[in-house]
Image 1 (cartoon, rainbow over the protein chains, first blue to last red):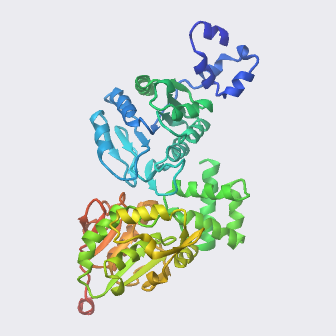
Image 2: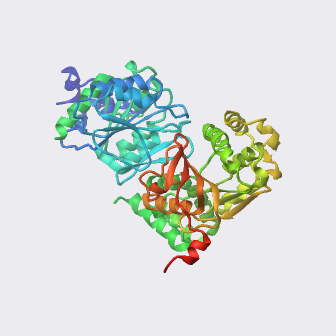
Length: 239
Length: 284
């Protein structure tokens, strides 16, 4: 099916099409004859045949609400481990873990040094530490310099996760006020992973999800509820 | 194994064979990031290009060594920790006529300065000897210089106040447009020395050991090794202070320590040391 037909028949909308073809806005407007692009590109990242092993999520302003919405929408037997970086003040407090645990059937904990990544768990980055994913599936911590003014940094999590899990990784960017995470999403795409972004129109602050979309490295742009449904569908297909 | 992994492995192997520093016992993801960060500052394009430097160019190696082994830190970082040190640990230390303190992994010295100021304000400085050690000589030189960036002083002052500082951080340094230099009097009782936690052992008996956010970079085996050295260095009831996300739990020395102040990860050593007499009369 040609792309024009696909759009006409509502199989895919232009925004999704553009992000799936990994085109920047500039490339998109320069593309003269996109109607003849092979539709095989449209479905290059379908989830069939992919076996994912880890989900990483990054968020900042408005993140707590956004995370609660996603976590509460996940299936009870959601069997992919989740690691989350939410930008937070450098003082430790248990409020965040407690709040997320309330909305979640999975077990929620703050990352400790040398935690093994295991299904059924949600790991939250602690205040004032970076979280890194090791190739042997452990989580490690660092107090290295802030990245994008942030520690914990989403880029640090996403980039190390991409190195360790490659195409078996799902990266998700939600609401937030800076561009921490965009480089991470680029790295995830380079390694063949799947990238989702919260639809900026639904985000409390749209800067963070919009940045990777503008760079053309987002596979799916979805509302929070749709992200949860999408993840549930993936674990069904994983089986 | 992909190309980048191969490069890193060969680089670490080169460092080990040429200089004896074993980074294979470190958590690799951090090392990789630091290597790549360093690479971006050089004119080289690939990690493998750093290997000839390691083998043939000591200056270039020193720059790489600094970037992968020295962590940037702050004066009075984690003010709540220093507050607990002041309020809970100092009262115990006051009972001793002479106090030995070991700051392990002192890097560029921010934590040592913080400790010196705190001990000064609590009236203990004159009977304390602080041993500040690190395995990176360049970091030790910076620490000895007492010079810090004037841009960060404001943040440090704020940290100092939050930690229960009794006057003002400005009382302890002189500043010009670029730098703040701390008083040499603060360094009267500090001994700086090169000490490698991976290979070196006990050198003195300690009342207080601080090693905060150093163990997080080590793998389990190396952590156990370092904690054993700490346990063997500490007096009975001596204090060990770790970073807020570090613990002695699940380590090989778990049973030798008890919690003293849980939130601040301050532990007390309960391992009994043999006295010299006991050592001499112990049956062989």
